Length: 403
Ligand code: ADP
Ligand code: MG
Image (tube, rainbow, N blue to C red):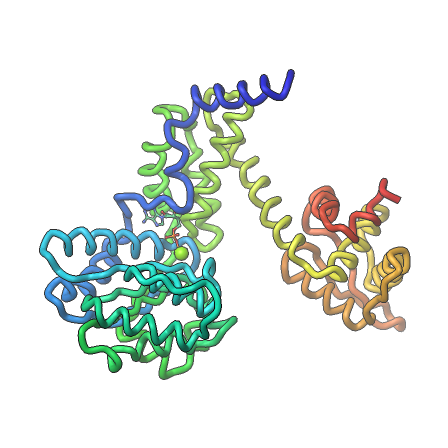
């Protein structure tokens, strides 16, 4: 088949999908109109923000819970409704949502916040302090209630400190025409405790906790979504239940459940199947796991990759290996590349890190009078490791077959 024919085939197949009506509703950024099992959180956030419709400043809100518990979806949903209502009743409310993991410097967050009030800050050339001053001045002129929503705030604070958060929660003292309410959201429960008490107390005037979903709740969520995403009747018995059960085991993550369902559907479609079966869900799980592992490995520093390569080579030969063997093979790999190796101590730390990431399993065993060593096996398929290392300009040179 020619390239054009291949593309035509893919496009026309997707147009007459036997599986999907609208696969986009399974994507993570889709905000559904119905959010089952989050009635309590929706009601709480809505009642906190409601006074803004009459011009009063709502309390700052701090929202936390594990990933995939609906924090972003609920917040966006409530903000959208609030904004619609404000237009209806003529309240001066400006709603601003920033994901600070994407816009991950204080300056970029200020850029986004400024955009929400129609202020265009230059991309470079002024200091953060100056940007902040201009933002506050413009905000005041606008005489509005400004709801600044900072999602995944832990990313900003861990990298650049809590300065902006602190300022935003205090800036009402600098304003007379406008008011600011801050909604902070985080997936990181440890971050909540690590926040400076003065920031925590001003941000967390009200706190909303999002508990994990259980398997039954995930089933409800998936069913509602599946009705919009799939052709009627294409989901085999047990598909929703399995996706929900697998995601419930991983701390009740709705994103995980939806990913499993979407990828299962995509696999079924690629195979030309008429239905999505539990077998497709199992394959989806393996595929998602591969992606996760690939991402972890690809972002590791070079020496960690080389240690992992050493482990993978040795495990391919013998099924398992030890710390000593890994260190000596790792040194050989370094000398082939002509680079300096790190100390045995450091390699030992890398092995512990790989273990913690779930990429290898390292078990301490006693060797009698020879002391202790660690017996190491791979916790992920070796072809996944090799295919990711293939992408690394240094490690790839050392791969079996490339020598
Ligand atoms: P968080 O921000 O807590 O990590 P999200 O709000 O991004 O989680 O939710 C993850 C995914 O699950 C999104 O696609 C979201 O639409 C969906 N989701 C979460 N909770 C619900 C719910 N109660 N009903 C329907 N979909 C939900
Ligand atoms: Mg989120």
